[in-house]
Length: 201
Image (cartoon, rainbow, N blue to C red; front, top):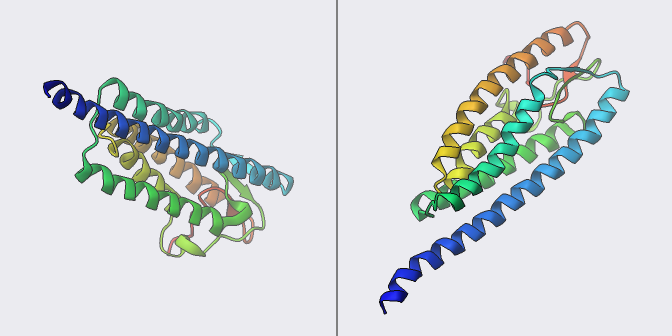
């Protein structure tokens, strides 16, 4: 009886941790699909004379996102983080909404979407989908997911670390995009192909 009382919580934790690893694997699969779309669109943009900006910071963005997907499950398993339903279920809902917003951005930008900053002369800015209301909707999804995904299973150290690193990276990224957009203004109707900031409203 005593042994059952001691081992039952461990079975519950192990089961939730296993499901969390499945969630991380699904997010990894989403990232692979995202990169495949990005690579295809980047090739098309370059064939059309697209000019890339911000190559220097891009590897750090890749490293930060890869680190999130490694650190979150590692913290859960190694530090025995619990699944707290009052926190985990709302955070899972945020993760799913972030994915929906991200792919809404991809769909809205079409061939102009990729993970890099690329200016294609002569292509107009996009005003469809979430870009009707937000300047950088894809980054809203990134921030929401970066906070929520670790907290699904109470990996708070990963959440805090990624949010701090991501805040710095996004500050650099948005500055690069604004510079690229300013230079694109020299080309009538030019636009951006990554997160595609809309013009000031």
